[in-house]
Image (cartoon, rainbow, N blue to C red; front, side, top):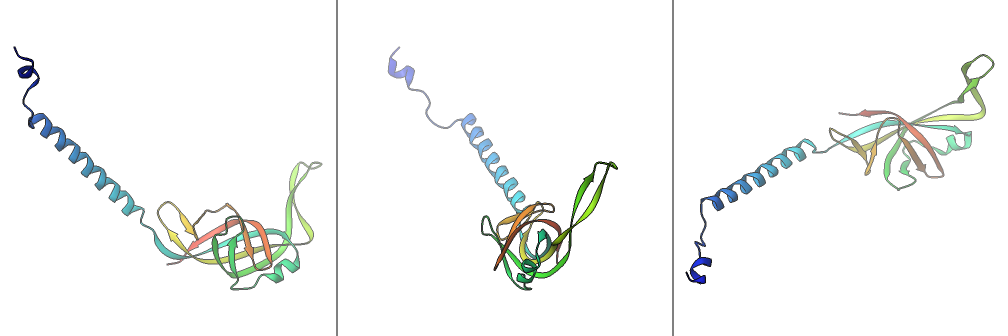
Length: 163
């Protein structure tokens, strides 16, 4: 037999080739559909949120520097956090250990105040997270707040999503 006749076979599409192309097309279409459903579920919508941040152990000059309507930024990355809606100052306190009696006691700190800032901002709210100015916020998260003439680290106490 001639080598040309042995190597020269049927070179067109056959049933197996068509079946493989069909399977690949179905997998691609299914993946595209699943991805579009996932991203649709993740669609973010803009809402107004108001969240409270507690700044502990500041003095009276710090409290006086905070004004209603001040724009706030995250002092590490520079993200926009919103603006001050309200501020409340209370006497600063720490929880200390009383070793003699074996319990914890709440002790006031002289000449210091704890400030609770209510911050109003536009946020992208999705099923999984709340993002303000590109920064994801969560209750209990440490956040570095910076305004005009003041900066301090604090913790997020509460997040209220407005309708």
